[in-house]
Length: 503
Ligand code: NAD
Image 1 (cartoon, rainbow, N blue to C red):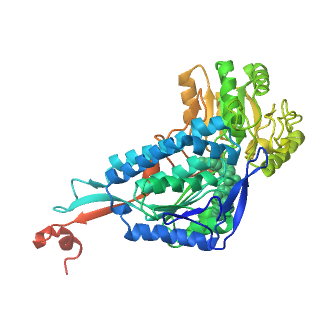
Image 2 (image 1 turned 45 degrees about the vertical axis):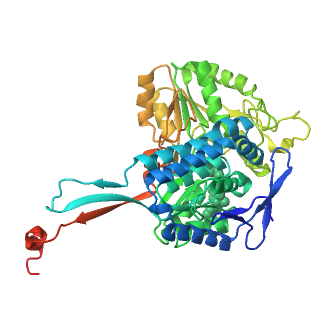
Image 3 (image 1 turned 180 degrees about the vertical axis):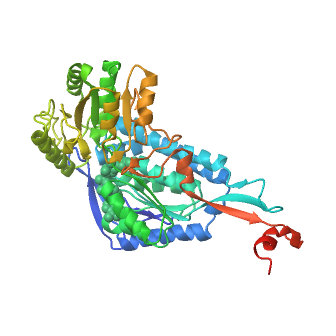
């Protein structure tokens, strides 16, 4: 029996083929446990469990209030188990225990609470008065799609799982989600919570396994009515192709290369903190990271030296220690990807002004090959590959600009449009710039703050659709118009007289 099993049809089970894979603490390489490795046939049985739960089970027939109550119960249970989930999240993915405690677990439970509220408050049937075809009445019903699937990345598994499951369930769908293999355990652990909450079997299923088989099945299986994906833009394109076979609606949350604009009227001290947090939080392994800092030329030198000074103060070490700011990257191969980009940056731009190497002097037991120093390239041309491509690591490009128009032009010169920031002492000026940025979220004098009440998603190649907010709830419902003629007299059928007088 695997240490972490698949959660299908309300029960924990091994993969049909009995296969497992190891999951490790990236900081030390120590094994955490064996995870059941689903194959295509496990994905199919999870989809069938969800289909059965939707077609025959009670879930879609419950009232919004009843579904909301269940989701609130799930949120309460998650909060009650916060320590256990936070520890597993930090150990498995290398994110700091601070992040897991203050962002991941509360981020997940608050998503369940928000969508509970959506289920309770959003009407599922709305009268449309004043029919143009009297005496008919018309109403719009908002109905679940049926079976939804969610495929999620390795950087925020618990939050990403909740962003896919909570709105799907709130709207009355039944769902299957697949976490990334590097970080699957907390998503699988959600099964415990669903069991304790007495969620009907098959309503929520979680399976771990390779994207190329399990993920492809979730995006293409004809029993699936809608699919939602968070991950790289490259795989997002593949998901669209797979979903097109049965014309499934897709929600895609993809990559980013966001610009954080520092104006000449900014409080440079605080702006430096916002830029560093915006870039290096979770080692830059965050889709909306502000990895391009655009800095007004009149404050450029002063600002860059503030950045270098502060970056050097970040504490790198064991992610399980509350004093640590930067833990390991998620995997050795992610460190190697960062190294390839830093080598490219050295060719394109020159020596980084800080970092550019693995840290030395880490505590015993920590693998130095799993860590990377925060790295800053200054004087970067926005056309450089390191300014255009998503690195997904602790690398910041600093780019000078002369005026607001140029800042906006550089910010928008990207295939991506996920996040962005404006650091300024003048809210009106910052607001005008935010309005011109072609991106799904802009933080003024802040960064990275996401809440379930507000929509999140990308412009351009950063994605399609929105998660969270009211839009994120409606992404899991479809509208049905019902037209009701009271019948009776032929006078009530005016279109027959007008359009089909011979029948
Ligand atoms: P990835 O695209 O490699 O994998 C994401 C998920 O897709 C994983 O579960 C993987 O197993 C699965 N997958 C891989 N190939 C597949 C296929 N052919 N068919 C179906 N599923 C497949 O991304 P990652 O490396 O896990 O995460 C990093 C990426 O995710 C970055 O590009 C980052 O920007 C993006 N991301 C975006 C957001 C957002 O909200 N926009 C949030 C987090 C991460």
